[in-house]
Amino acid sequence: MIVIPEEFARTTVEREGEAGARWIAELPGLVRDLVDAWGCTSDGPLTHGGVGVIVPVRRDHTPPAVLKVSFPHPGNDHEPDAFTAWGGRGAVSLYERDDRRYAMLLERASAVTLAEAVGGDDVVVVAARLARRLAVPAPAGLPRLSDRAGEWEDALRTDDVEFAHPLPRPVIGAALATVRELGRTQPDTLVHGDLHGRNILRAEREPWLAVDPKGYVGDPAYDAGALMKSRAYALAGPGAGAGPGPGAHDLRSAAHRIIDVFADAAELERERVRRWAQLHAVQAAFWARRHGFRVARGGPELEWVTAFADRLAELLTEPSGGPSAR
Image 1 (cartoon, one colour):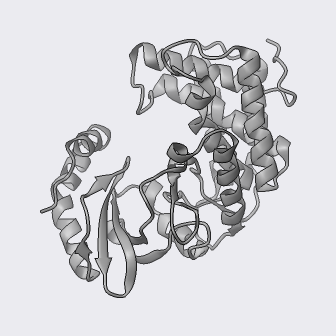
Image 2: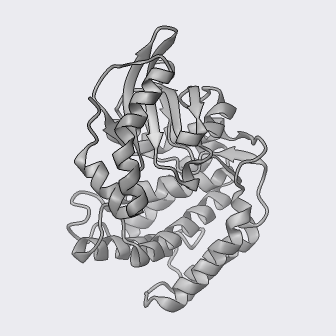
């Protein structure tokens, strides 16, 4: 019997509305059909991520696998294309795909994430080395990050005007400059697009394997921004979300340490890594004001997270980590 977790059903309906409710109602039958079509048997309880369910399965001619079924959304279109291009190098292997139903049969890794298993520089080193391996020539037909540059610039200008915020003018200007100077012309390289510690799983075939790619074409340094955002609570230190966190100097040192370690391990130019991470931080600060986050939808916690994003964006603006002038 396929039981959809209540939390996953609730958040899907809250996010997707009526379309989400219809999909949740159809999901148990969809999972059963796919298990049968691919000759699998269930091998454990169903789990879920943010936008899809994961069912451990087995079949005779395939190592232990998982069936992943995602909500039909353009953001999930190119995940199987990325897995196909990588062919198991640095990421889980793709065994079957059903693009119409947003379903894949994937190599099974453990449930242990990089974020849970290690800390400090080791998280950054593992993620950066994977980012380097995953940065391969992009196949045709994948979405290009450069095509989103205009959208990014418009959103930054709109948010700057619409929201009362403390970000200094040089911080906004640096983010806009990154969009213009790095965003509009990018290499034909496949990048993960959301590479952080929770999207890297411990495995047997390799020590760590990436999951949940977006499958973008663009600058490999782009992935440093997702990692930096995911490390925010760790940067804030013990009690993150419950207090002011470290002083500006400590946070500046920690943030720039991540930039240094990622650039070295991924064999990328440090300044490009810093600029992409700063853009991500500014975008996160405005996203918090417009949408909130899954971990903080409102109240004092969201206020704290938003203030922290502001602070991180400002500290990443200066190449040396020095204070930015207003």
